[in-house]
Amino acid sequence: MEIIIRETAKDATDVAARLIAKLLEEKPNAVLGLATGSTPLQLYRTLIDMKLDWSRVTTFNLDEYIGLPREHPQTYHSFMWENLFGHINIDPKNIHIPDGNTADVPATCADYEAQISKAGGIDLQILGIGTDGHIGFNEPTSSLASRTRIKTLTRRTREDNARFFENPEDVPHHTITMGIGTIMESRLNLLLAFGENKAQAIAETVEGPIAAVNPASILQMHPNAKLFLDQPAASKLQRIDYYNYVYESKPAWQTF
Ligand code: PGA
Image (tube, rainbow, N blue to C red; front, side, top):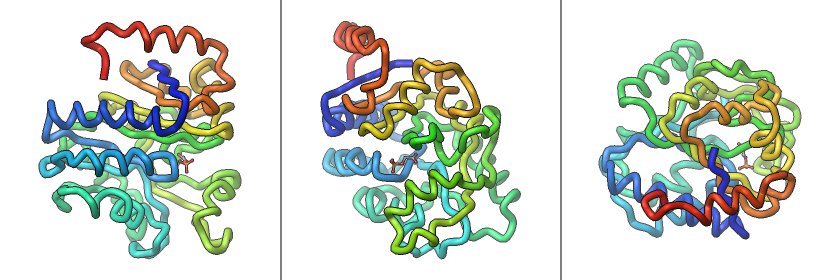
């Protein structure tokens, strides 16, 4: 795991954006895994401003609520069009978001996995993290080998996400999410976490044991996982000096 700590969320985001831009330059037909929520908003703004060529890029979103009409402002479909897809030259046929209105959830999930495989797998997956350590909507105790499937949100996640809804009761109970096994097959996992409310989950992810009660901790087993943190999100880590030393000592060929 590589831990990159910058003073502010914007500074950390800028480093992550440079890494993504470099990938798209080297591989114009890259397959990106995308996340929603407040954390990647600045990243998407920065990528839009970079005016990258997305014409051959394929994307797969991590998750989607079940049961909200697709045009509802809080679906991840709406989020992605508003905050990224509507501002870049991506080909709509290369966009994939789980269908939260499917009549056959298992078949839709199996098909999502098949489409990821057909695209050649995900080159770079962007991840946020829940205050409970979830990645995608893989809530604590999710199987660490899980594939795309239905998940029931925890009360805490529903409360965390209520801020986006007019009425907290409107937060859906169920989602379709890529599984942890799916995420682990991405060739690069890039997790962003900002703010003091993520500090505990980050400390457990980086320095705690690998355990399904903190799903993000499985990234310790990933060969190429990079965490981009602001100082508040890093504040409960024990080995900050070492992580900073590693980042500052990077050989030139490893920098981005
Ligand atoms: P947030 O959500 O970016 O809105 O904090 C992160 C997540 O739940 O994965």
